[in-house]
Image (cartoon, rainbow, N blue to C red; front, side):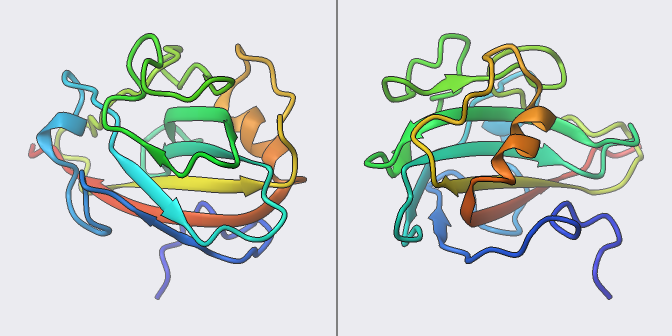
Length: 173
């Protein structure tokens, strides 16, 4: 049975490409550096994006957060097409590891940076979808103060492909 809380279930199907990380393996728990309090964004590398890709966006989303709308941990827009890697820690307060032209939108804590996983104690396991979105425009045209949900809405009309790594986290009761 598929998880009823699949964040891609109502989105258009698009080709997939490859995202890897020296920080995490798909399906594994987040390492300590990616938990709340340390808040170090993961290293990401990607390849095989669809032809015609003109930029990328990166998002980290927890659909299992007890909010009714999930929780956005990180959103980066306007990563140039020639960039295929972000170093660990790129999502700090200044976006020091982001390429020229790329910018971070405020997450659901209203911080324009990566914020680590912190599921409520006893709530069970949470999934964190780290997604690289291949886009058909050089700039997505979303204001820097916009929400990640608005970025996602805008991405939907420009999406060529999606690469996904899923991490987990759980806080014991």
